[in-house]
Image (cartoon, rainbow, N blue to C red; front, side, top):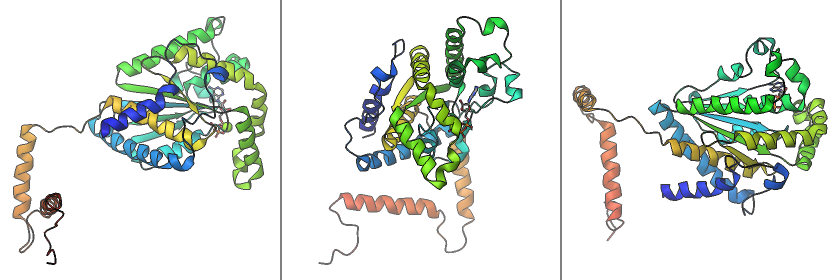
Amino acid sequence: MAENRARRIAKLIAPLRVEPGTKVTLAKDFDPAYKAGFLNKKDGEELLQGGVELLVEYQARLAAQDTWGMLVCLQALDAGGKDGAIRHVLSGINPQGVHVSGFKVPSAEELNHDYLWRYAQRLPGRGEIGIFNRSHYEEVLVVRVHPEILDRQNLPAAAKGKGVWERRYQEINDWEHYLSDNGFKVVKLFLNLSREQQRIRFLKRVDLPDKNWKFSANDAKERAYWDDYQKAFSEMLSNTSTPWAPWYVIPADHKWFARICISGVLAHTLMDIDPQYPKVDAAKLKELAETRVLLEAEAPAGAEPDPFAASLAAEAAKAEAKKHGGSNGDDPGL
Ligand code: ATP
Ligand code: MG
């Protein structure tokens, strides 16, 4: 059953993965409206619910084991659906185990450091899931599309000259390799939205008063750079999808399908880590047994010495009775 589920998830996300070393041309290789043969949103709802439950279980184990961490980098064009995906996919997860960090235009203090500094400050700890809502990839996206931003980064001449993007790809790959060697799985999701869907979503933000706050005139201006972004995303995917930190291109025109895919990628990564609840040693088991004796001895007169164990035993007996002929032990009415 669990294996079946793992296989289904692997099959769903395989076409979304950017194979390391392959050259990607977004427009040609990935369809923003893809939905893997799913007919509609209703088909997908149950699947998403299943994915979310899986994440809850694995996150609990990840936290208990306290050895591995997971960093999820979310990138998208404006209105790609990052915020909604975070809200839906992470619903139900223990908030203590997840940290979401958003990255906007860097502050003066951030610009005063190397370009990876501010991202390093927000990395998850062991047992945690860190979500980067925008990430260090902005350093080869918006900074590449708008070279004047690079000029503002106070870099020495050699660090911004020819070959700067190739160098940054390499530096980012090396950084992620280092993180992965240290027990932090890095998984990267690009929400691939079509130009037309972006137009429609922007209009929704203009038309609906409750959404007005989400819209900035600057977002519409960035649309003029659509082709430059497509190129920058394609190059980023081609150069930074690695065996230790792969990219997944999430078809984002159908939000419901995007969310299924995202929960699938996260579940797949966690299954790969396969975190386990720590096993206790013989000394600890002995200590637990002694504690039980002490607590049972404190039961008030007439009370069950261990009500929890008693309820477990009753449940087990009921299940056993059901297995043998559907009787639950009550009067069968004959
Ligand atoms: P989002 O757009 O992610 O939904 P938001 O609308 O709340 O979030 P914005 O005010 O749009 O936040 O901030 C994100 C902006 O910051 C984007 O335009 C992005 O290009 C810009 N940004 C992010 N990282 C950098 C960076 N390293 N250098 C320059 N600009 C950056
Ligand atoms: Mg924005």
